[in-house]
Image 1 (spheres, rainbow, N blue to C red):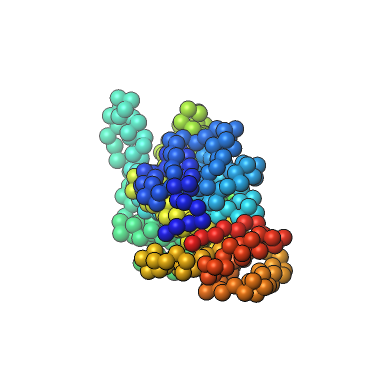
Image 2: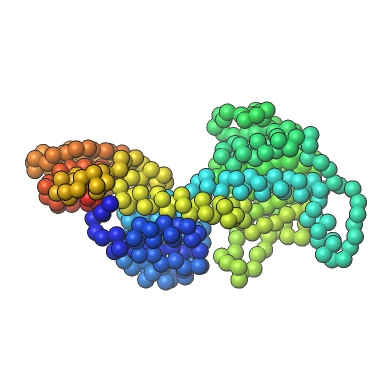
Length: 417
């Protein structure tokens, strides 16, 4: 399939060691790909983005309004991870730059880590391993328990939380969950009436919620005090969801029997930077460097997921899976062998515009004034941005593109054929 300019002119920049399967997918499309193993210095980003059409990042690269404004040719951004908080999404939307991510591709990896930590905390494996490394032979059953028959409380019963539920129940645990949105329970899991009700009955609490203003310090001093005495806490969700100093105090006092934390309020920018947390050095506390989704399988899945979304957007204009612009699912255009004569192939016009009253009328007036033969039209809006896709006769496409560019509210027009 051809696009509005040759595919070998489409420039892709991948930062932070994006998985090689994503690189291969872009290569197979004929795009020009540069892959860098680390995040770029923020001061270098504007230079690196010069002429780039597609950008792939992970969590360490932050795209501010200023950086986005310095990349006028940027068509799309792929966050090869779950979150997108490293991108100023409103600024990207104002420039009609769709941002894609992979919200579910590392679900299994996080769920498996959580189950491993539940077992490890109940057997105090971290402390026993450290003792052996230090030359101490602490062979004792004190403080070690099976997880069978214990109650697991899951805060956030989405894709990860529900998988943890299934795995935990298979290991003999009783599962209760709490979510602000009503969810269908899997297996024998039961919904708790409130967060406090969950905390009061759980032997171990695991958190799987997004980072939002509502979840900031979701587990603070009051919630920790409401936990069952000696219960354990796992946070593989987002830093800031748990009040770390309050958790530290509760562990020192023995009110919380242990914790596993993979995400922190403040995290180092890279491996060369020091890591600090009030939780360091505490007994029966497992600290990991934000690796919940960092398995080879998850990274490959994320690479394929996000790269596929970016390629689909370039080739068809489809924005399904975008987190900041209107989502429009579009049919594939006819393959070249179905319509051998390019003069007869429909052309597709992608029109992003400010979402204000009257724009659609002006678009349709331009179509009518030119007598354009429209074979398909698709429209969605989101907040301050509208997205119209028009499939038109090839003889009319260039004239209509020019007319649409002249509409005052136009943000970006792109022609596919």
